[in-house]
Image (cartoon, rainbow, N blue to C red):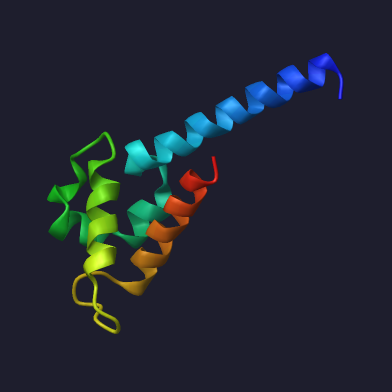
Length: 92
């Protein structure tokens, strides 16, 4: 790999890291998260008015505390979407 390719690869990785970080810091960047977890955000996470990762952390805490086969607190669809966001971010 030449020098130009190495610089481009480093810049690309840096940009990917920034995008992934923004997915966690501002949940509204991810329309699927907004759609799949709107009920949970509204009911349990202060209506989603929080930035800086507070909303996604609230959703992660809900997912951890959810009992199997109990969709009253958090839907399975929301849990899958939150899990995907966490996986995407952790791949940096």
